[in-house]
Picture 1 (cartoon, protein in one colour):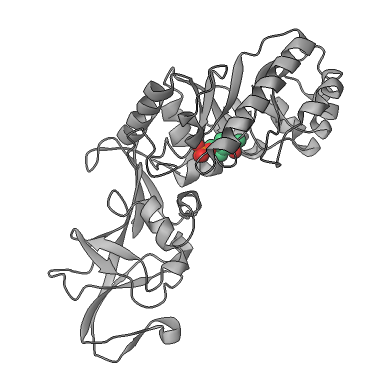
Picture 2: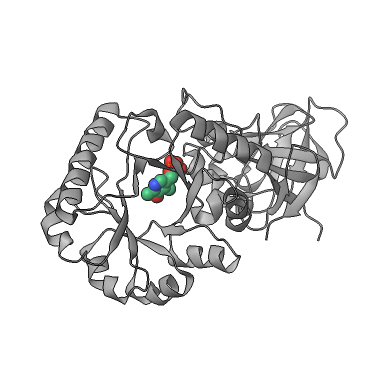
Length: 366
Ligand SMILES: *Cc1c(COP(=O)(O)O)cnc(C)c1O
């Protein structure tokens, strides 16, 4: 295969991020590899991460995502964060997936599960998935002969609202104590912290669920852990042309050249996952220099201004996202969040696994 666009997945950076986060929090890591590991390729990422003793669990969103990992030979336990539907029970049973029980609907299905091991989720302020504290007396009726291995909750605003988050931790503690008392059991894993949440003190919690941090994006600007972006997205120049002053560029003619210009057409468009809202706003890097996006981004191509960059040829590499053009920076220009851009990089963009930047290609995804 010959690729026009690809994403280099730097496993050395992934390893550094894992170790830095572990050193910072000293808690068991539940590595979140949902949504194809935030676009990085779930199987390759999970296979790499499961070798580390700090990683206790791999987390996915759906039963099918869990099945994909187990069929690829993943040995570490897989936790399905996004609930469980009755029609998924067979998948849970066949692949020994561990469910997050977060609804009375799940409790009624529990007897159909082969595994007796579950994690139970409480809602402390997200108001998405999870039981409330008041549900505990009713919940325990369903939990005889069940190994409640984990108890968990989730933060909606750990990066934004410290008071809200601290209140959630308090509420989670009370819930944990009450359930412990009523079940007369201890929980092996207690977890509420996502990447942003690791900055909060939570001594009764022994595990953290980490997604974005593993992939090297800080959840907020002053996040105190050094992280390196794992994915670098590149594409090739497919045409170069001179444009006369006054010419309109691309669909709708949203850009008019205010001088004679030189532009490059890059083989990367919104079908590859580039937000169309970057039209006339974003930029790529060519030969280490910024090349502004001019005109509307199209499905398969984007046009950039290379008037001030010399020696560019068809076939040259362009950096779409990387160390200097981070998901964080680009998401701000596109008025979205890095998560959304990361998991939008589409399957046309080949995933190439590397160890150290620009060194040996050890393996490939897909
Ligand atoms: C996605 C997810 C995470 C990971 O969050 P990050 O901000 O990427 O670290 C943790 N917990 C739950 C329940 C999630 O859905």
